[in-house]
Length: 384
Image 1 (cartoon, rainbow, N blue to C red):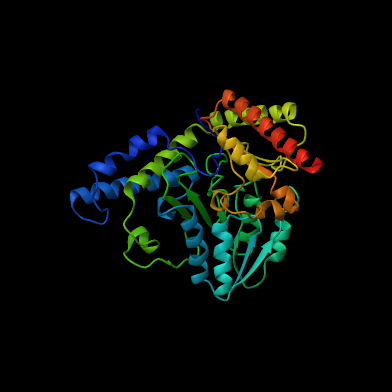
Image 2 (image 1 turned 30 degrees about the vertical axis):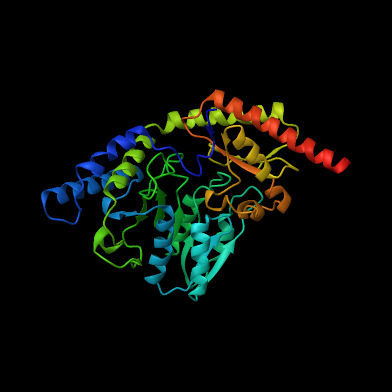
């Protein structure tokens, strides 16, 4: 039985062209980019070419791109790096952030910083006025994700960046889910820091990037060598950096085509649910990227539904991949006002450009069958 993979918000399959671009740097061009000999300089040239590619894709200068070990590290580096260079002792963030940000904020509180957490509305979107209302004279940084990884909700990052820049306050945004689906141009949006991840965009795992606008207060938190202009020590992962840049290049070249296909997949999926499932509700708002559909099936425990789907060859998720093994309900859905029971009855389906209409049809059929079976089992148990 061939698996249908609908958990692309968790990770994506590497594009074959990405793997092809990486191969020489895993076998023949294996030098250390900090070495002065020819092999080292060839590796350094590959890293710098990749840096220029990523920078061009978001309208940045190459010097503003810092390669990291992934999106989580980029988030951590952004928050700690800015605060180490600032006098302010206060941070504003939101209740729907990825745990990479929320857990870093918990660490900041342990270090004596104060953190204000802003709730979203019932659609999962944070009101920019609410964020600005939480800002204080000692606020050193605001961190608001661009696209939520569980619902796909698009946050008002561009508007916030402009209004915060007028107050001289840096804005960091976890843009891991935004890169690709949305156009990002830092030459027109005054955001100070952005986090990216390779494995969310058909690139390799273990690599990401931090956009760090020139002039943003920043002190490195990783000590060691002078790599990445003394902003992130450690020998560069050359092959993965090349793969990440190739993934960015392919993604942006195909954005319109991909988005059209993803929208069609979403519409077919939701129409299929409407025809085949008696009771369900879409948690994802209208203002969301189209490849993420967070769906509530009242009375159906998502752990049981996901198990049946997996047995049927359908890969989906209960929410963030970083907490998928947890029995706790989604913190994002709870922040949106869903009850604990409804949060535990919600499943995230996330599509990619590699998915087909036939796969969507099969996923709908298997989901409808699993929901029906689970509800019948519960009804039978109640009668007994």
